[in-house]
Amino acid sequence: MHTSSHEIPDIDPVSAGFTVDNNGLVFYKESPLYLPPKERSVLKLLLHAWPKVVSKNEFKQHIWAGHMSDESLARCVTQLRHALSHFGLIQIDSLYGLGYRLTILSDKVVAPKPAQQFNASYASDTPKIHPALAVACVYAQQLLENRSVAAFQQAESTIRAVLSRAPYHMAAKLILAQCLADKISCGVDADIALVEDGLKILDQVVDIAPETPGLQSQIAHLLDCKWQFGEARLMHEQALCAAPEDMLTHFHYGLHLLATNAPIEAVSAFRCAIELNPFVPNLSLMLIRAMTFAGADPADIVMQTRSTCRMYPDNQHAYLHLLCALALKDPQPEIAHAARHILLSAPSAVFWEGKISYILARCNDSAGALGVIASQAGENVSIRAMHSAALIEMGRVDEAMAVIKEAANNGCGPLPILVNSLENSLLKLHPDYPAVHAKIFAHSYAD
Image (cartoon, rainbow, N blue to C red; front, side, top):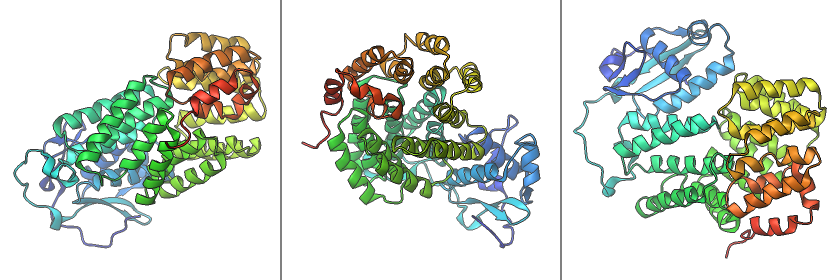
C-alpha cells in the first residue's frame, strides 16, 4: 500500500499534463487515457479534489452509488496505480483513516522531448511509447479478464489501434497474441488460423526483442491452444525460470496442467498466480475449477465459490460458477431459475451457455437445457462442444461424443480441458473415446 507523510508538492495535475474534459474523459497531454469506467471515475475524483484527500465515503457516494465495499475500492485503486505507473510522475497515496490523495512527483515532471519515429533499433524500449498508449495496453489487458465476447472485441480493437500508432511496441504485440489465444481457449473463436497469426506476431518479437517479459509464456499459451503440449511444456518451463514473479506465467501454466490432466499441479500453479495478484477474479475461478478436477469435496467447492462471489459481488461469471457448484452438490429448481435469469441478462457471453445448459440438465429441466443447446446450433464447434456435459447429464452420451469428435477434428480450442472435466468423465467409457484422445493428445511430448 502506498502511504505518504510528505508535504504536498506545489505542482498541480494540470501543469503535469493531466486534465478532465467536459465529457468526463481524462487526458494526458491532449491524449485520452483508456481506463475502465470505475478506474477512470476514481482518477477523475482525485484530480478534481487535488490537493485534498478524497474520503472513502466520497468514493462510495459518487462512484458506487452508495454500495461499495473496502475491497472493491482497494482493487480499483490497485488497478489504477498499475496503469499510472507507466507515467512515473503521478501516484496515489493512502492516508490511514482518511482516504486517498493524488500526488504529483514534481521532480519527475520534465519538459516533453521531441517525438521520435519508431524503428527497430529501439523497438523493445517501452519507455519510448507515449504514456497514453501504454495505458491503453493496460486497459486492453484488463478487458481480457472479463471473458465476454464484447470485451474480447474491444480489447482486440484497442490493442490494434495501439499497434497502428506504435508498430514496434513489443508489449502491445504480446497483448494482441494473448487476445487471440484467449479467444481460442475460451471457445469464442475456433479458427486455428488465429493461433498461427498469434505465433507469427510473437516470432516478430523473438526476432526483434527476445528478452521481452512474458514472451515465452505467451508462446506456450498459443502452443497449448493448438494442442502442441510437449513443445508448450518446454516453453512453460523456460517462462517460469525467466519470470517466476509473473502472474500470467503461472496462470498459463495452470491452464496447461489442466489440459494435460494434472489438476493437482494446476491447483498449485493457480495458487501461485493468486499470491502474485489477488485481485483477478478469473484466477480464483480457475483455482476452483482445478480443485473440482482434482476431486475436491463439492461442499468445499461451494464454500470457496461463495467466498469468491463475496469478493467480486458484481461478477456474473463468478455467480455462474457458484450455480454450477450448487447444481453439482445439490440440484434444485431454484438453481435452474437463477441460471435462466443469467441467460436473459448476459446475451453476449455465448460461451457461458454450456454451463447454463449443464445446470438446467442437472436440475431436471431437460427441455430448458435442450432449448439452450438448440439456440447455439449455429455457433462454432468449440461452443457447441461445451454442451457435452449437459448432453451426458441427460443420457445423450452418443450425441455428446459426436460433437466432441467434430471438435477434435478442428485441432484447436478448449477441448483438452473439457474432456478432462468431472462433468464429462463418462465420455472416457465411450468406445470412440480412445481415438478422440489420441487425436487431441497426439503431441503430448516434445519431438
